[in-house]
Image (cartoon, rainbow, N blue to C red):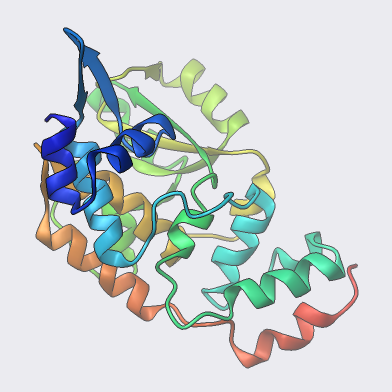
Length: 244
């Protein structure tokens, strides 16, 4: 759609849409001298605004901070020992918020997303390599969503390399499977499913299609966020203790 159409849907002036496109917050292309905004990208921005996530909401956290935060919000302090005392103190303050929705922007660099294709006969083996997220992850957390057999989950870079060799996984812009690659395998240690904040963030990739918001997926994102609270009191001593 045109910049003017996008501005009307967002409820902002056209200059703001141009700024969002220039910042990479909206996908846009120039055709015959006219800038066109990708409809799915715009719908995702509308959903984020409805959730309370502001555009250009500051620098994202590094992967170690993001993963420590996401796991703490699930009452899991396994990664806190990787942070020094000052970093733990800052993280505790950052997580002491009444609404976790803005944290979706803070953890946006939690992984590198690779879209891939693989023969259907090998998709089950690929699924076994990842910590599930997205639609499957939501189901494990108790929020049933129907979907296809696409894989959506986290894995370490070495596991992706092994999958490319053993399962003939191929990068593909139109591939059905989303592999979310992390820099440190310790981020995923002990996890049977991605943290709720990660699942909510990843569901945003499934929440729009054809420029429209999928109401069931959007409701699941809200439900997941609604279950997330500030770090439990039981974690306070771990936050403030010296690093090991």
